[in-house]
Length: 155
Image (cartoon, rainbow, N blue to C red; front, side, top):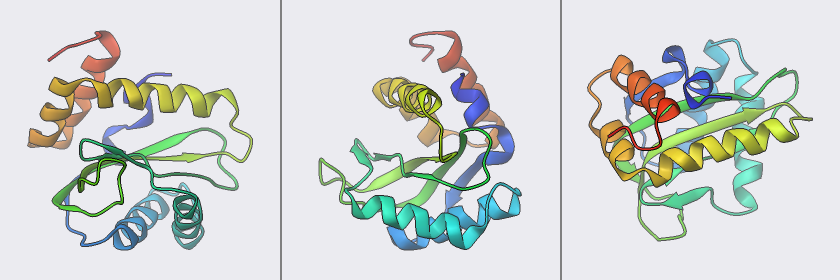
């Protein structure tokens, strides 16, 4: 599983204007619904339920909200850069401006671990994270992700 396969160009959103985690989940749920992936209300609710267990804010301005969703046949991702950082109750207390959301089938097993591993690889690559934050287009983000797949440190 490649990171670029999780976050295809139509699943990348730049400069999303939200002011809270709740608003972010609603927007991402709507986008997932528009893409025909899930029911938007169910998706938003599932993200909230998961987040109540503990923040998915990794630190360094990155969050990986995720939830198991009915009727998915594979792990899907949505990536968003935020117009302004928002509080996410991240482990380091810093606001979040880069979000890599995962939606997983109810029985995703090893695919979930693979997807989270790929995201962790991106999150650890400081140059890739900086490039994602500075990306001017969806195509730039897609190219950065493809570069992470091909090299341990493309930037």
